[in-house]
Image (cartoon, rainbow, N blue to C red; front, side):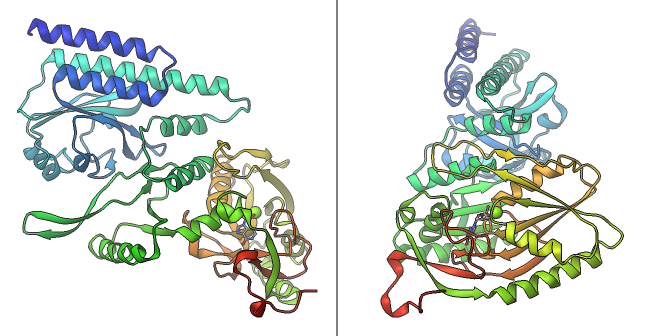
Length: 482
Ligand code: IMP
Ligand code: MG
């Protein structure tokens, strides 16, 4: 081995060790380590981390690789190389001839001849991989493998240190998975193109939904070998297997985006993608009292959607159905405060089987400074081995329910089902199975029968549509609700 190479390796290791053991922000530390490998080896390098389900490899940071190669897509942990499965280094001397490469054409196109994959392990647990990509065919010497292994170890040290720092910093005793997710999010070196994307990322972080920013560019049109049109969705949510495109642009540009989405769905039918319009997103934020619409006061109820009698009738039907399905059982009905209190009271009083009732309360998203959702009041009764029924007032994006169901699943119930009075499917992000649904509601903000807008309207006996002040015109207003 040439002396100069040995020197370069030593220098890179020395720097990486210093940075892994410093207070440097995680993403800057990871960047520096990856850059150090790339410079010393004169190669492209990427760091990928496993999502918390340990199924996908998500790009964290890289150096010396083209954007199009980085956006080739989220890799499957078991299809791409296999170092994260076996915990052993993988050397691919010829990417075009090796079945362990998930996107061989992309690699060839990006001018990559050989690849080296070194697992990143914290203790015995694989958390990701460092990959080295060379333009020339390379066998990768022992020295090379040892160098990258050392750098992968230092990457693990940086990740672990950051995780420990977070555990120390968190006042509340969160469980490990949550801290791990937070570390993963921080490990991403992301620069957002638009503030609304950052706000959306904060909202996902709050509900601890993993996300990747612009991981993949889909080819939409070709002329022979030449790609003439590409589309890069803003987010991919690996846990939900969903791409999300935020469109806060002018309405005229939305038509163009819709065309691209149609084309994408046609070419890649297996891809789940959803478009969040500016208006939807602002309403979503307004629900939490943030964003531009939050400044507008809700005004009055413009329309009664379900009268008190209709609600009672539907609650009775649901109660009967549940009593039948759970005959001989004794379910634990769990509600999330506070919106559900009216529905819970009416539902259980019409059930004919014995039930237990319990409530939990969670903190709500309040803009950029809120970190993650917290259980403010957990259940008093034990869930293990019980038939648990989540009772909800309304399921909108499904992010709240997604979080709560994960929390409950971890406690080992013998079954877990969901009953919601209202289902607002239009803006659903988390694809959750709703076993019992009272009514499907349109994409309007509804209040009454427990549901509030900034704590108002909960005591209305019916469910009505709240008319925001700005859109209200005199002629549209019905007589004032009683
Ligand atoms: P998700 O997490 O987006 O599904 O939101 C669920 C929670 O948001 C519900 O439990 C409600 O508290 C609240 N929410 C969603 N939509 C409405 C609405 O139209 N009116 C009142 N509250 C709503
Ligand atoms: Mg609720």
